[in-house]
Length: 266
Image (cartoon, rainbow, N blue to C red; front, top):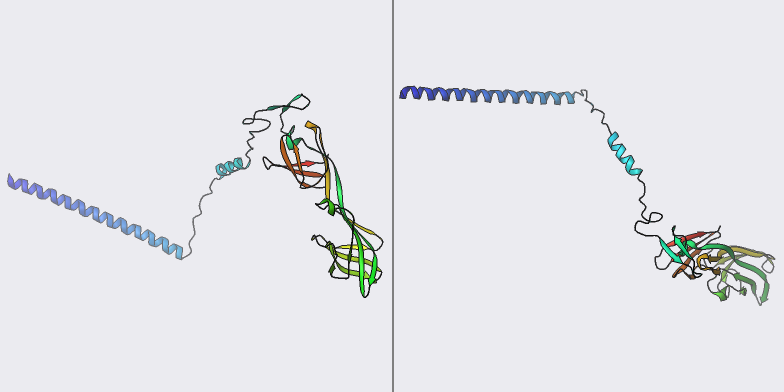
């Protein structure tokens, strides 16, 4: 019985060895086959064989999503929806009550530009005088756009020759055209950095260098006449700075919010 048991164990061991040998042989053959395929592919590439092309990718779902993002509509939470800013009711000094629905009924949005006025720079040549060998050229100058009122009035100034500055430091005489004692015109370079000007003898040079404006505020019937850039206006319980004035519009900056509002001439 013991001998039979020993022979049985040997048989099982032999079968296991055969199975392991078969598996090892199979793995070896599979590895050799894979290696052969890899080598064949490498050789094919080296010979410039045909390349397989990728299939066409359907991009419609992605392009559609991008198109929706580009066509988004802005979310408006202010006027006229007033989700976070409820509609206000205001009382005028006359006692009437009105509804602030669009936001332009009060404040800078309610301002009206009534009229604008050009501010001129005018220069006139008034003649030549001689002291010894020095020729002195005399001019009258009006600068309506100047910030200080005393600089806006008409004033007389002189300059003693070319490439010299006048006594009021308004301009430099660049060139005397024609006779030195009786020039046909004179070229001046303005000290404020603006373009050179040519003053013709017997004519007044004129150029627009700014604007002033008449501004009204209808809710309180306020009138602001002949106002200039840099001035301040008080209405709607707030201060408003005039940032700029052009021929057809005024830009205001509200002090409490720093918001800029452009009012156009109607």
